[in-house]
Length: 321
Image (tube, rainbow, N blue to C red; front, side, top):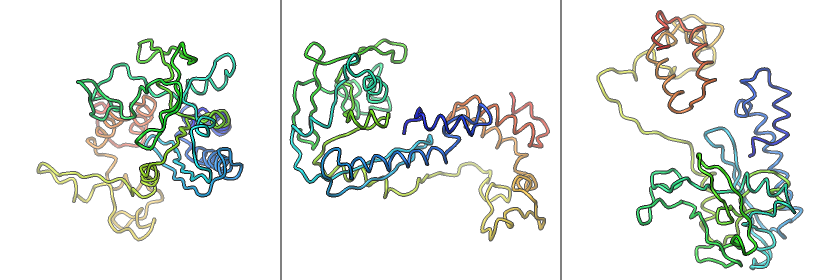
């Protein structure tokens, strides 16, 4: 999923009624429709147009990230036995020539570069607590070693051709967290030039003969819903109180809008009747979550405006402070 797709930007411009609603994650219907069309088109390229060769079986699963964008994991079983020459013809792990292929160069340098981190540290997210000789180790083993030809590795994935600068390879400079870095082929995520040019997105293409790739793709289909474990501490019971935020055992939407025998016309009025909007601690916790986890000034201002308009708090200055 590329939030910069022209189709998405044009659709957002036609439907947006305010600056705040132009955020891509505010329109999940548009995001999912356009993404579905792209996936359908790609599956036709792979399984009917056979851009990699004849496919005898395939599977794929879509994962929706917490931040609101989807991506798809696709597995193809090929009829033709894979060899080094075939892999070289469809998979590249090099920065393209800026003069000869400027559009592909722009897509690869924008979408297909892994890192690099400013400093390797085992506490960085990409290192996942791994370290070698006291320095952090990238989970994806970047940077990769530069080499002049392809070699099938022992872990089921090949070591792709990544020519060094001076031996036919290219590089470019980019500012990473305030520091100018030279990025060469050792940081390139393997890709297919045709797919990158057609779909203008991060599309990692790998050749694998490992069972791990099947487990990796199918876990997104079978992993189930998210779960949390929490422990209640302290004397105050905010769990069984009649004014928590859930109605137990509702029989209909009308039942949810019914408070003390009175049916309210909207859910908001029912919530106000339950005195949920008058809980200052709840609003404080809401703002802390926005500040600590979302860090979006526009959402913070919009939520505060909602408190001013809809909340019957007696002293809203405490929330402001």
